[in-house]
Structure formats: C-alpha cells, structure tokens
Image (cartoon, rainbow, N blue to C red):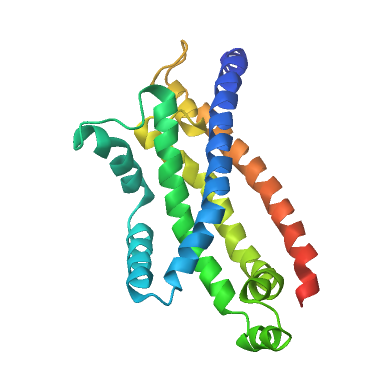
Length: 228
C-alpha cells in the first residue's frame, strides 16, 4: 500500500495527460461526425440512384468492418502502399489519422440514425407544409428536422457513450490515450513496472465521464418532450 501511495502522483499525472488526449479525440470526432453523418444520410436517401447505392455501399462496408482495422488501414496505407505518409510523424500524426478514422466511422453510424429519424416523420406533415406554401427547405428545418432531433436523441446517446469507450482503440496505432498510459506502467514506465492497479483507475475515469454524459443527454431528452 505504501508503494502505491508513493507511485500515485506519477500515475495520476500520466493518466490525466492520457485522458486529455481521449477527451480531445472524443470531441473532435463528434464535431466532425455529426454534420458529416447528416450529409451521408442525404446521400443514402438521394433520388439519384448511383449516389444512393454508392453511399449505402460505403456505409455498409464501414459498419460491417471493425474500427480497429479501419484505424490500421487509414494510418499505415499511405506510407506503406503510396509511399507518402500523409499524417506526418509523432503523436500529432497518429492523432490526425485516428480522428479521420473515428469521424468517418461514426458519421456512417450517425447517418443511419438520421435516416431513420427523417423517414420516421409522417409525410402528411410535409404535405401540410406544402399546402401552407412553405418551401422544401422551410419544411425540412421547421417541420422535419425538429421532430427528427427528438426521435434520434436516444440512439445518438447510445452511440456517444460507445464513442467514449471506443477511443481506447486508438492505442492500436500507439496514440497515447488513457488506457495506453495505464498499460505503460504494466510494461514499464517512469520507473514503475509490473503495476496493474493503474488500469483500474482508467475505468474510474471512463465511469465518471460516461456518468456526466448520461446525465446531460438525459436532460436533453427531457427538454425535447414538448414534441409528444
């Protein structure tokens, strides 16, 4: 116990740095994937058949393959196959590659949620908007979009909670997120080796962050109850 107390400041400092990287990847993914997912959803619902089927094929491939494989391909493909490392070297390059992989992966998942939410709005309401002389853009933003948001909050909340945990997959390309930091003390880091207890602390970070997100998303869902 005394040894653990002595190692605690070093371990917590390292975990805090790793958790900041996890948070950064989480928020960058959300900022990129939420709007991109809506664009992909429009593509999958397009009346232009080639675009619709191409978009759905891409979504099927992305959703049907592990995110870990996508990370490895996106990070290593440019350097090994094209002989041109787009991402650059070091932690910054690994973060950029991770962000691109996460944004595209989650955008494809979000797109299906968007598509279900949009198609779930009764067509009669859109027809009513047309009768009232509203344009297609007005109908989408003032009728369809507002009701879609209410419908997609629960499934989007689940995906966002999953994203928090999925950020740990970035360690496959050596991005130094929180689990990478905790596992380093098991292998040997900063004079500490063979210590498994830091990994249990990483679980506490995830539990607290997921708890905060659960409360915030729950309150958002309650505020959207006026659509009932």
